[in-house]
Image 1 (cartoon, helix red, strand yellow):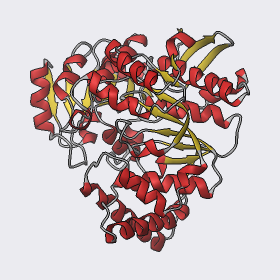
Image 2 (tube, one colour; image 1 turned 180 degrees about the vertical axis):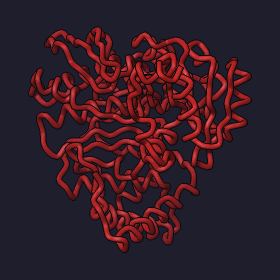
Image 3 (cartoon, rainbow, N blue to C red; image 1 turned 135 degrees about the vertical axis):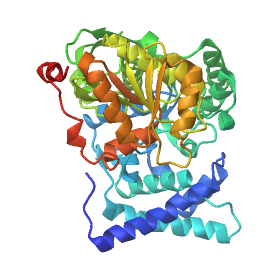
Length: 462
């Protein structure tokens, strides 16, 4: 929970954040020279921490959170750096599961901003938004004595600002076509960028990847003499039956350990694959550190994971799920998650998406579980207008298309339509959309819709 501030404090935070967000106008500048210069100005805080470094198109955030939660069972002062945030910037920066407070944030923002300005005055390239927040996190970790952390790549890997870190294990989760304007238009090109996090002699764990991606990463690992491990070969995860649509029950087994039944509060079926990756990494880390992680610590860590906006169950009757997945690979994961819960028919979709995404292919896949969609706006300049998104949905094959002026309108209409049949509602297409909903400011009365509607209540309205 964010620390409360006075009105003067709120204004100060807002002013500092406005200056930081203004750095988004510098765009994305792939490369490590700028972040290295910024970190040098700040005393090279990256040298004080060892990390588990996580790249991938889908799943990297979930795996990062799982690893941090497991590590917290055995160590203190465990850092976690993820992106993007859903509601508050401070979500990105954590130690032992607790976010940075606003009291800590303001002086760090000032220090990083001053360092960036010094570089600009010296004729160096202006640090970007992501370079500044990465430097801010590393500086905070150093001041707080963090020695072990989990760091999620922002985009790509090879030229990502996080690639200045010193990994104990490198991890590459699922790879798909996303950010193609920066990373390339083929799986091979994107895999090459992700493989850029592979370091000499540092072991690498990979998730379920297409064969063409595996070949690229194997070649890179071979060049760097980095041992390569497939998570699916090191850890077997089986989904177990459960009557609770808000959880995922699994069992996990490796060559050295049987973890038994684990109940996750992240219900997406695709999380089973992420668990296999996380457990494979933890066992490998134990080998590197010379100490095995106790079975119960792994179980407790995984069962403590909370990861909003990733097939999050907001309501059970009718079922309402919130998922920030936005590319074709994510659509397939969303479909699999629904079908695993036997909810793969008659799904009502509420979709908001950025204009730079592969919208048509994303929506085409979702027509296999739905014929009805409500398109909603995003409060982001990159957002696709609802009427434009609606036209794309028609071309993708949706039979009933409803463009909406607000997110609130779309959600309420979808739930009302779904309630008589107890049909599922999936709100998806963007993490920005998830952030708006979880912030609550786009829905004046959340209690009006995040509540259960019983079967008797539904019948009374028919």
